[in-house]
Image (cartoon, rainbow, N blue to C red; front, side):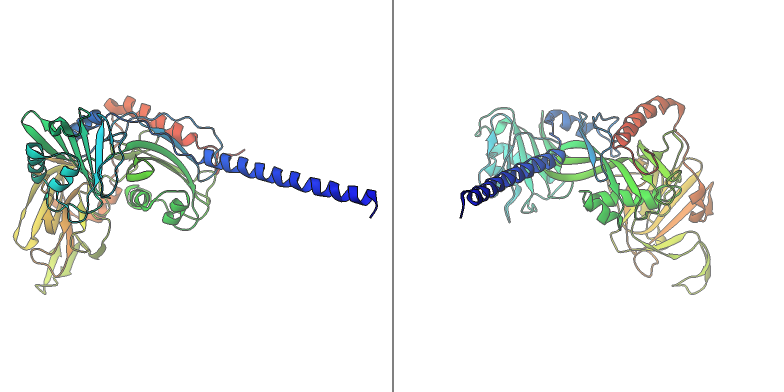
Length: 478
């Protein structure tokens, strides 16, 4: 073999390592870029005492945050998001800088908090002992917890957070806050008072994050949101908005685009709960020029960017899962076997299915009423009254005279009274005269009032800015 051919072979070998090195470097750069693009927002720690104060003062219908600030470049692709950590506390307690070891002793941050996971068969007092809470303090905490829950019925995997005002692990008297949080439900917060300890509902740990999400529809809503990185909890919030709450329901098609501003409670990398949808924008592939719907959540109701009401004044049906079995009007009574007027509509549903107030109002009564069984009656503005019959039980936290809100649970489906099986009888009166509940669909909620106009405009601008930050999309042009 001559010198020229040897030189040529050497040159070929020397090129190959260079190509491989370039490929490795390119792969590293792409991976880093991908991780930076999809990085979660850094969550700002929030003061637990401020959260506890908010928890205690919040009403049952806690409003969504007034505003959120987010910076994002326009032109993000479908499936992208804009995240902002809110500085306003929600009904949740954040106990920062805490780690726990399942089944072992807690890791602690001096002067801040300690945490453990409940073990199988463990009672509250036993779990407290692993948090170094014992003696008289332990007995007072258990007594406070017993006012709302059974301290013997903790479940494995529940988390206990304890906040102390000193770093000493043996000083139980330094305990200020204890949060008992189930895996996927609302927790319970116990706070030290002048007389001992007081327990109150609520207390999931985490930080509230407002996210603006842009997601293309491919297949069902559930599969589309999952593809865009969200869980089924968001489907449970969105589906009623699209199909039931809007006066003109939105029907999704493959190729449509949803832009959503949502609030979620995040603890580390885990989404504890979807708190609500603050804004919704739908862009239709069938009508790219004018098929755009924007709904903004203001004090729990949906409005256009101009402040016009977008919802029926009443829900189309007061339960999410149910099949209508009887209409309004004359019918053959299934038990009495004779023609009788039926002053409402019936929905068949499983026992225990939540029943919602059809509109804002005040609870008139929750009582047993003969053939109607357990009945809840709610009075609304404009001379309307709604009735919910044959309930299994009532919501005990709401008393006659208390205000209730549209979509708030007032009872649970049962088969009490004169009933052939579990179902809900839903009746509506207007000025003491029964109406067909189906006729309520055309009654639209009023626009934003003049007193709240400035607040609405401020909040709507923040929401619209978040939606716009997601970039151009269907029908926006080039």
